[in-house]
Length: 184
Image (cartoon, rainbow, N blue to C red):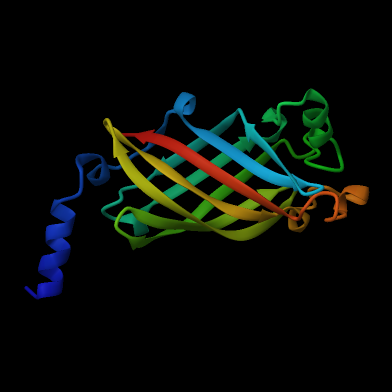
């Protein structure tokens, strides 16, 4: 056995138990999907309160991982009822016609110890785009935390149409963060 293979085997043996088991069940009460946008240069934070995930990740074999995450766009919570109502409207998410955003991973790549990236399609308002979402895995209890994020270009998904397409008012970049707790 080569030195490289021995080193890889030794590192895999040191992985915590949670990283060695396939994790398939999302714990919604402990998981979060949040975002930060900029409106007239001021950060606006929010979250989505309802989402579901079908996930199967074995960090010892990340290339075999798969995930489908669906976000109920009407569950947006910016802390202001008026802003939430506006975001659900036709110019923004148009939740009457497009109630969910969906991410489907096509592959997971290991970047380093406990660091990965999911590559897949994000679909919002009938528009699908490739995204790469880097994340870390931190074992906890009998599961693990998956913590990561990506930058969403809102105009690519027709989020904020008409007068709202002005990036001087609302920036195009939206920082999306996820913190998901998964158990076997």
